[in-house]
Length: 80
Image (tube, rainbow, N blue to C red):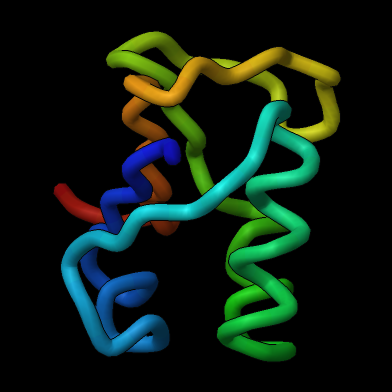
């Protein structure tokens, strides 16, 4: 099971900082997360930065995941 880490607003929506998700691909994992956490999470995932094992990846890619994968969902942020 891959580990999903939620940051900022994603953490608020998920109600947890991290969870394990059974998925063999990034697309499958993101779909499972959106099903579980609803429309707000689905909208956030559309604009979020997604990292797999510390590397930025395309959300719409068909990347394979290992059971040891760490997927991080980082909402967009503003700062100055």
